[in-house]
Amino acid sequence: SAASDVYKRQDKLLANLGPVDRIAFAKAIVSNPRFAEISMDASVTALRVLGDQKDPSLVAAIAKGTNHGNRVVREFVAEQLGRTFAKEAVPFLIDMLRDDNGHVRGAAESNLEQISNYLEAREKWQGRIK
Image (cartoon, rainbow, N blue to C red; front, side, top):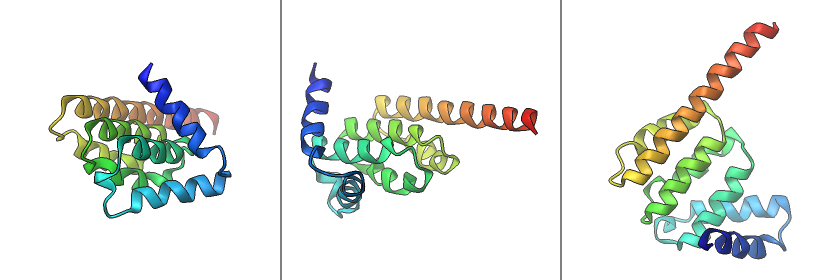
């Protein structure tokens, strides 16, 4: 499939980088002032590296892709924001509900739901375990 081919190319690109260098590489790509023009493969690779961390401190870096010129990248941004399970991702996802593309709006809504469900479950279980 096309998606598995993209992942194979990403893995090959990242194979020679250690974990710290992968994150630095990803941050450099999304921080590039021309990020909205960078190819889909490079953009998705960087966003995947950041999303794989599931780290709320990376939400702002991931969110830099919300204005990317490629709708597939914007959809991927919504998914990666959702993978952080962070309340900090919510404002970015809410803004993405206004995207011109229905796939992006759908991904934003789905990931808002995912974060909401996680936060509700976490609150419930933290309350029960006290």
